[in-house]
Amino acid sequence: MASLEPVGIGIYTQGLGAMPAPKQAAKLAKDNGISFVAMYAVQQDRFKGQIRTTIINKPDAIRRYAEAFATEGINPWIWGYPWAGCEDEFVERMGEALKASGNTVGVILDPELGYKWKGQQVAGQKEADPNASPPTGTEAERRASAAKLVNGVLDLLTEKHDLGVTSYGMSDYHRNFPWREFQAGWGSPQLYDVMPDQVDHGIAAWRAMGWTHVVPSVPAFGPKSEQNLDDFLECFVDGGEGIAGMIVWSWPSISRAEWRVLARWAERFKTLYHIL
Image (spheres, rainbow, N blue to C red):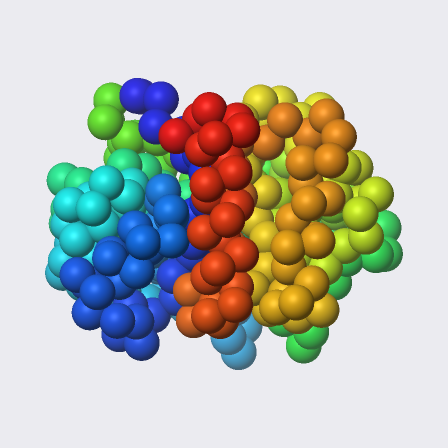
C-alpha cells in the first residue's frame, strides 16, 4: 500500500444528505484548511439479537463528494462501524463504496462494542450508546473475528490506498477488546471528553500497542467543544505527543466558531509541523 497517512485537520461525516452540496462542502473545507474528510459508508449493530447492516451513504453519493473533495486537494476516506460475526457483508459493502470513486485514498475502521468479549473491563470510559447491551462471545471468537475483518479489508486495498483504525481512546480501560488484532495502519484514539493528562496517556498507550502514526479523534460536541475547543486541542501538542494531525467528530456539529478554530489549527500544523 502507498503511504497516504493523513496529516493536518480532518473531519468525519455522517449522512451526506444533510451536508452542503459536494462543491460547496469541498470549498468550505478548503477555505478552512481541512486536508482530509472521512465519509461514513457502512454501519453494523445488534438489534433484537440480530446483527444488521445499514448503508449510511450510497456509493454514488460517496463518489460525488469524493470527486469534489479531491478536486480541492482534500483527501477523501471512507469509514465504517463493523460488528463481529458479519465481516463478509461489511467487507463487501465497504468494497462497493471504495470502488465507487478512484479518488478515495483509504478505509478507516471503527470497531468498538461489537468486538468486545464477555469479561471484566476497567471502568472509566463509557460506550457511545449509553443503552448498549453488554458484550457477547468469547475472547477467542472476538479475536478471530477481528483478524478476519482486518484481513478482509486489507484485501480490498491496492497500492493507492491506506488503512486507519479508530476506537476507544483510553485503551487501558477496555481490556476485553482485541487490540492486537486491530493493530494495523495508522491509529486514531477517540479522546472526546477526557482530562488533559488522559490525552497524553491515551496517545502513549496507542503508540505502545504499535501505532506510530497517530491522528487523534477530537470533539465538536460536548463540554470540550465551542469556547473550550481551542484550549482542549492545545492539550494534544503541549508535550511529546508527536501527533500528525487531528480528525474531528463530526461535520454536522461544527459551528461557525469551531470552523474558525479548526482553520487556525490547520494553519498551525502547516507552518509549525511542516506536514502539509
